[in-house]
Amino acid sequence: MIFNQWYVIAESKEIGAKKPIKITRLNQVLTLWRDLDGKVCCISDRCCHRGVSLSCGCLVDGQVQCPFHGFLFNGEGAVTLIPANGKNAKVPDSMHVKSYSIYENHDLIWMWWGDEDHKTEKPFFFEELSDYSYGSFKDEWNVHYSRAIENQLDAVHLPFVHASTIGRGNATLVNGPVVVMEGDLMTFYVNNIVDDGKSTPLKPNEIADYQKLFHLQFHFPNVWQNFISDKFRIFVAFVPVDEENTVVYVRNYQKLVTLPVFKQLINYFGSLSNKLILNQDKRVVLTQLPKKSELKMDERLIMGDKPIVEYRKRREELKSGKID
Image 1 (tube, rainbow, N blue to C red):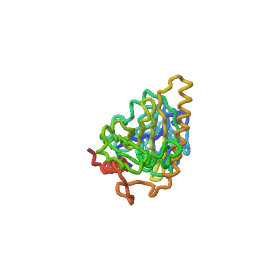
Image 2 (image 1 turned 60 degrees about the horizontal axis):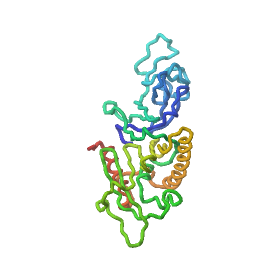
Image 3 (image 1 turned 45 degrees about the vertical axis):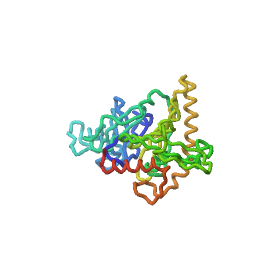
């Protein structure tokens, strides 16, 4: 995983104030809940006393109570009460577990994975989507999150994996793609056309007015959007669970329809369509080996894979700390 980054780890609706939940993200087993002010708290799921899962406990006055011996943990991971020692007893400073900084906005939960002194004020989001309504769902993939991301940077697969949906038309010849990097934001422009047996694909530097082409964006470490139109976008957060598993959160954002009942119907059917398309991807991506991608691999890439190449290069820079 790339260190010193904000990662989307969940949706807001998954975290409640009645009981803690247990999730694994970035190889860490975590307990999340909301305190009395509604703030999301995130700490290690392993009690520092006897190693019990804290998420099996309950919430008491906005804190997690260990189910084994009743220790109370606050949002900073510190034990505030050891019942066996009495309410007036001082709790040793050593009684604590790791806590994680959380940011909540746009009905998403981000977790800071890195050093606190390197933490930025807030994570990146495609702010223009604030004016859209959305429908959402999540799916679990048995692959490293890098493989799931690369699938959405792949223009070559469309007429084969999605022949019955978004890849209809047999547009197998790929012009470009043109990749533009602005810091941690990647935008790539592509034009797939039917192969007439005479044409050869245009190289990226041969494409005039590439900004007018179909395009997608990815922002490190794990969010992506597809520009279907000015009024319809698809957003995905690729959430790393561990080295071999990913949770994919998919949203279709739209402002075609704004009337409450009708926009909910549009969002619902949009999610159904996205599920169908995503399952077509999943069937293939889950067969890729190895499950995790790297900059240098035993693969023979082609020009149409340029977004994947640029993603791997930037990811390697960020992992190594060689940031522009």
